[in-house]
Length: 174
Ligand code: S3P
Image 1 (cartoon, protein in one colour):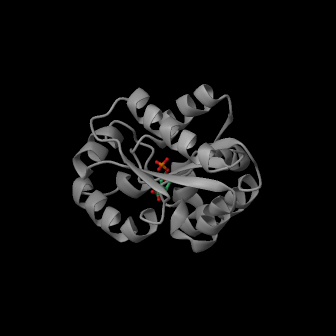
Image 2: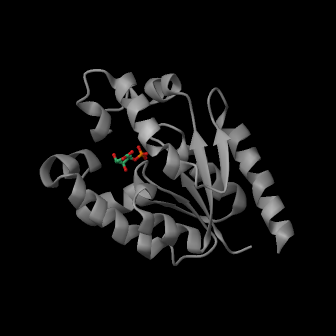
C-alpha cells in the first residue's frame, strides 16, 4: 500500500506523537503540516495567527496540504482545523487513509493546558467551553474520516498498535 496515513482531529488528540511513532514503526517519512507551515513562514503558529490572522494561516495550510497530498507512503499529521476546508479534505483523501483521533473535552483540556501554543484556545476565558463548542462545530468534518480512534486514557503505543491493525487490514484489500 502506498497510500499516506493521514491523522486528522482536534488539538491535543495526539496526532504528532502518534504520527512520529507510527512513522518510525512503519519506516515511513513523517510530515507535520503545522511544522511545515512554521518552517515556511519562519515563525511560530501562534505568532502567525496573531500578526497575520487566521485566514492567512489557513491559506498557507491549504497550499502545504496540496503539496503533501502528492506524496506517497508517508505518515501525515495535520492541524486540528485542516479538514474544515473541503479542498483540504479532498486533497488528503486522494492518496490517503484518513484516521481521526478523538478524545474527551476534559482530556483535550488537560493535554493542551500546559502548552501556550494553541492560538484558538489561548485567549479563551473558559477553555473547556471553547473546546466543547469547537468540537461540536467540527464534528461533521471529523466524521468524514475513514477510521476514528478514541485516544482518551490510552498510551501512544496502544493507539499506534490500533493504527497498525488498520494498515494491515488496508493492505489486505490490495
Ligand atoms: C488548529 C490546530 C493547531 C494549529 C492551529 C489551528 C485548529 O494544530 O494548526 O493552531 O484550528 O484546531 P494542532 O491540532 O496540531 O494543535
